[in-house]
Image (cartoon, rainbow over all chains, first blue to last red):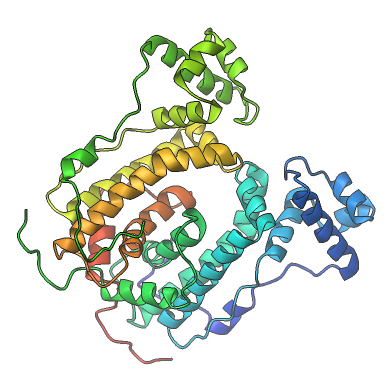
Length: 220
Length: 220
């Protein structure tokens, strides 16, 4: 949070970032699969997240409520895992440079945006999440904060290596590098995401700067 | 949408952008005020947007349903106007340069973010909007698209004047200039927004570029 950016930066190497820490795996994969499938089916049938109850999910999955509560403390915890399952796993970072890592992160965001557009269930769950504060908070703590931390470490590594400017707040630097793709992939639903070169174009343009080569021609 | 960016750019001068076109003003300001206040009161009492009906709003406002339908075609149209009222009006753009206009636009987003954090009703309405597709679409068409168009024109003016790079898609350029502040003000709720210098810092840093001055010191 308030780390002294310019002083000792103790960022782990790229490798540990690749495999995010998973919460303890449940023992019965079959029951878990049935539960995930049940939530997805209930949502596809037009249900809302708010209407879902543990009881209804258990019934649809053909398991007892206790089976669900052994794995998840509450509905929010279960739904966050449903969301994580609906999404692709985070990719490994090459670690060749902060620039290269950022391109991979932005490409993950690009593909996630495409998935959100094409996978109705994912979109509905992500959208409905906004009106369920407890779910939103759990998702934020378990998924968003971890992803932000990965980005922050990449950015700080880039600053430490002299790849990125060192005179800006690292959180702000992070927002500048991530913002455009996040905007396109998550907030504005109609901008194209198909171009696989987009992440590299964004990162390299931001590094180079957006100022016009020519000076202003006649300040009208 | 698919305007030929590099060719003839017919951007109006800054002035027309300052005063966004308003839909026809209703005749009775008092009735309108009562209706807006009623919606805000119902929301403050813990209601949800989905539960609100024109009947309930009319009753709370002490007006007939016909009074509401004379002004708004449906609930979504009314709620978008409620949202617009909850927000500050868009600021005039100085028009001195595309850079200066962008700083003003980003500062509007910064102040809107602060308002969303401090005004509970605004936050609730904006969050709940996500799970009401018809409202979201109406808000998008009436508010978001207009704001995006203003930004797009500023960016295209900057490209035409040589202030900004001309080799990038103008929509992408727009996202790069807007993304960081939008991310901070709208998506990530915990980054600080108090610094009035933030908009200028963002725009100027993006124009200069984020590459480190020093080259990489020892690729570890």
